[in-house]
Length: 371
Image: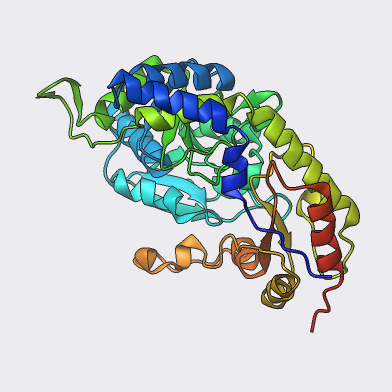
């Protein structure tokens, strides 16, 4: 029997909180204040407390969050235009674009075959006298080993900026992103674990001076209207998105717990010799923004699941270093990252996916015949 399992039911996720969201939006509408108002200040304070990061700066999107952080550090630390930032080759292109937009040079390193993340050992081999920062990406919902990355950074005098766009609520040794390095950048794109109803992003940090510089750069480089100290940009989280995120933040931990439950069902019931499960089936160390499986017959498996009514996505079919936008960089090979791009398939996972739907996905995967 064919079942229909969407990859991500954004409408259903949002409608769970329709009453609270509607009330929050109505309050913003009635205030007559739609930018840089009380809703933004409330969310920034609330999310900073959630992350134990003291400071939060709401911006327009996750790409801007990384870009502004690097721009601020570049100014404050006096980095040259050819200063290098090391980032993983397996990530969404926005991570690299932020480095380029900040006037810095992206340098890719390969990722671990075990958790698909930047490791201190692989990053270390890329460090040169021009290296200024490490940019680890907490991919799929799992945080990097920040102890080792921070030790490497301290050993070489490097800054650390965390890309936490896929890791809302994730922890490493009891600490969330933004409490390790200089700052962490979040995206609140609608499909994230904590998603807005449009574009939004934020930077969290324990560094007040850095937060102030990011806030200034995001406001055309001005601390006072018409007085522009820096070459800034316009990047603001609007009041409606801030109000919506404040509502949804109250449910983030419960939503992440449900994602882990679905991941446990997959880990227990998917038993296919051609399908590799993430983290060897371990489900306690990720908030599973994505549940990735890996198969040499990925395209055939995706087609099979589609015929079974199961929607899937690929993250990411073309590695960043093979994108045309970066063909000016030296031609390098990153075998693990390239293999992941060739074999990764993301299964449905969300805070409203039911156990029965998850079991249907398992049955469909197990019925696949790799040709």
